Image (cartoon, rainbow, N blue to C red; front, top):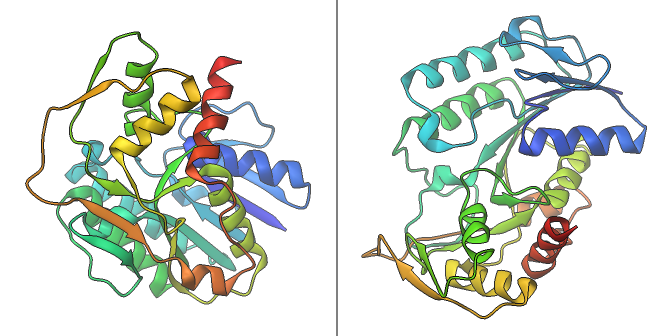
Length: 275
């Protein structure tokens, strides 16, 4: 089976590439805007010349919300339109749960309304529509973390401060609650979708578990074997910021459940740093 991965040098795309190659069941063609040390990789900004394949995994978009403005919005729509002209047998688009917003949301399912509050979210929603109109599959991912710390992420901010001996760390707020999923579980889910008979539509991908920022800090401290610092909020919220996914739809569609809990995942991350 031939699989094309856009964004193959990125945080998620690179892990997808590594695992598909390891399994040795796929002819993988990585596509990136950055150079890749991989035979057959395609370096391009223009998705109109992507190769034919059985499956396309599309994760070639900016991952930092603040980096998406009107220019990037137009580029994302153009790339999605180019991709769909190729008529892949299966298209899997990696979207984000951020489209739901972040106010008082426990047990968010795929029928919950979206909250278009930025160019980043608007771009995600428009690409989702294009993919679904062409019988594709949209995976709305929870907060993904892994062995490599994602740049400009909460985990990077916490980890960078905790590596220092200071007794106080500074975070925007500590009460926000999110659903965190380890990168290996995302990859195994996508592979399950590749192999399975999954109907077109939207699927949440997460753990369904809720963790506050303060709990994340505590788990990092345990793994680093250091005392819990005083956490100072720099931007306290006047509302409960919560986004936790209901993932029953994807679990019932393929043989998949997340296998790495947050404590285990943070231990893997910290161990990788120490080594």
